[in-house]
Image (cartoon, rainbow, N blue to C red; front, side):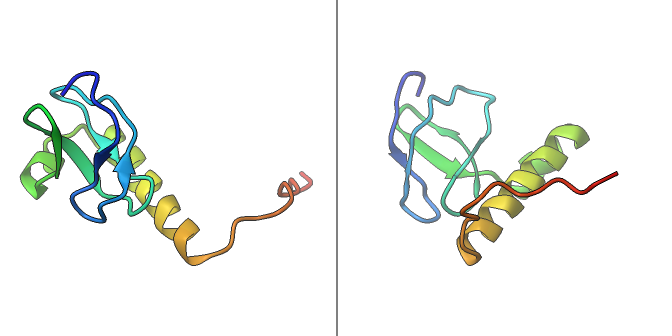
Length: 87
């Protein structure tokens, strides 16, 4: 699968523009699914048992990324930068 791009997400069929290799995890930017290479030209959803084997800090990052993607889909994107809270 190395070097292949624009593979459709098996969950939502959105093109995934990435170059995943064996052992990589890709997050679909449309639906937040965790994807892994499946052969030379496809992606598949990561199984629960595979996800449980990922180090906890990586799991946390993937969870946060997926949540942000899903939130983005249900709320309009901000039009101006967010203001920082005063300390």
